[in-house]
Every structure is written in structure tokens, then in C-alpha cells.
Length: 93
Image 1 (cartoon, helix red, strand yellow):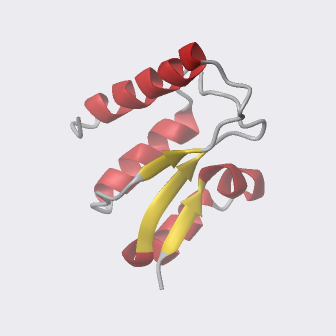
Image 2 (image 1 turned 180 degrees about the vertical axis):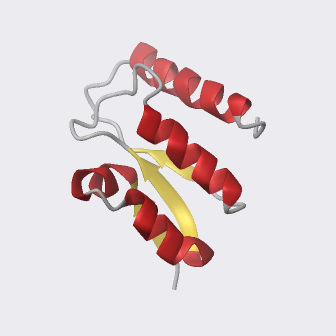
């Protein structure tokens, strides 16, 4: 059975990286959101650390964004830009 890592819930409980370590071989999706389901407006240390850890584990599956339906197209594109900068820094894009 596959495992989806929910970044928001992992961060809220302080278990993001222990869950990733325990279930990385079954990881089939990473769901990114923050507590308010607002766009990521800047690179955060925990988000950058997550992307590095995913790279270290060789994860190449989907990363989905869970954003509020109230987000504008501009906010969605800003979040995409933040994630792309992190992936470029990791050499994954």
C-alpha cells in the first residue's frame, strides 16, 4: 500500500521527517500545503529541507499542492515559482 506524505499535517505534529524516514519506500505522493492552505510566498527552511530529503531518498513521484479555492492565479504561480527555485537549487529541475 502506498503512502501520501501530507506536509501540513507532518509539520503540525512535528513528524514530517520521521514519517518520511519510516515510509519513504512506500511514498507515492507528497501533498504540500500550509496550515491555512494559503500559497507559499517564500522559501521556508522546512520546505527546503523536505525537498532535499525527498531528493536524498530518490523520490521522483508527484508533488501536489493543496491550496484554498480563494487563491488567485497570481498566488498559485508564486507558489509554483517558490517550489521551482527549491528544485533548481537541488538540481532536480
